[in-house]
Image (tube, rainbow over all chains, first blue to last red; front, side, top):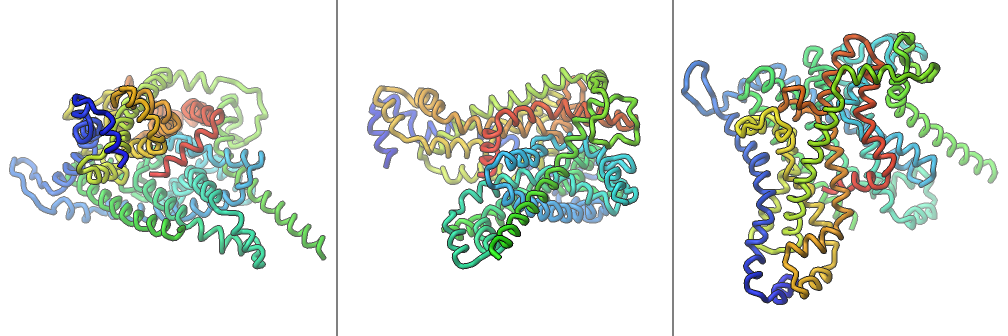
Length: 305
Length: 281
């Protein structure tokens, strides 16, 4: 409606050429060009590369699932995929729980709360590489921050990132420390959207603080929680800087994650076929996640109305 | 009875405050340690390195050594160039595309919109390997332009600008049109000034993301002259770690993190609002 009104008003013929479709495409062209070059083309290229089988010492090219077969036969890949699932769930659940508790605890705008919020938010602004550099010392056996203070409580020495049974959980701890503050922001914003009338009504019905949290806060934060969960999962697939700095996937692949595996295959082993096959699987996981998230988000919106 | 209940509630309150304070204390220790250890004398007792109390004369020795072992001036310049270059191009592309989606109707708009959506779902880091091939093919390997290029289009920015433009009443544009302004004048003189809050929000998110980025620059940069801060920090940390120079690592980390932490302290509200925007994808 408004568009036709605008067109009618402009009048002059020369200007009308630059209205509507041609103008729109001209404005979209720069974005589309870069998207084509660095999003669509690499997706197509990964698919092609993943399905392409090159034989060493010959120019013959074959097509098939050979790269995927080699990928699944690789124990490092299976380990990286399993690790990534553990890492995704292991980072998502505690960071969401902590973020929620902190948001509820710090929602009143007092000066004390504002200071605590800032403290929890600081790690979000830190480059993951810088966080990893600091945690080199946090994890240092014997002398580092963790062992020094746990030692005062009577705990022994722990090889936080050198012990294959613990290393992945140490990285999970780092990630929770780094991201919980970010998720807290969304819960704080979500809490502001809950009307105080609802709490008043629950209070009149005799609900205590815990009852009000469980029956009012938690369900109404449902959409926020779903949303934060999706961001947390995407982060778990796309951020491996701390793996590069702290462990290089080791010891014995215990902290190898998918993206680091891809990086290794391409950068260290020059096995582009396997790297591409693993990339395709990561892309599929991200797409599935997004499809799922659109549905949960829709349900969330529905829930609110 | 009543006063007992009230005091119990007050006790519960204190318990909650104490718990929150404990969490905050634990949360702050790594950064607190960084700030203390960076200014600690190098001959300070090795076993008490984890101490958080500044029981010494502060010194800048660690900073001097950090600045000595990595060319921080160049790292800062390169990082500034990368963040600034990305942001400048992004602001142009997202403003134009955001305007097209917000104000123009054309066939295929929904399809194109979904094509943009795809970039939100498939985050660039996953595509590092094929993008590296493209960068090499374009002859951009080991240049700062290679670090920037994949981010010149931003679906997130386009959505943000589209939302921002939509909140601006059309009356302004119509008034400008009656006075004979063309679309470029309308965008530049009417919409862009009114959309400044959205642009600032986008700028904060974009600069923070690229200031902190590591894996992609690591892929496409090889010569030290083109290193960014994060790559510089990683390679410098490796050296200092093998020499157990924890104070120097703390100082180096401080140098990399300080600009953003300072900016956040000064513009807290802006940062928080921008980061909330960054979730509204």
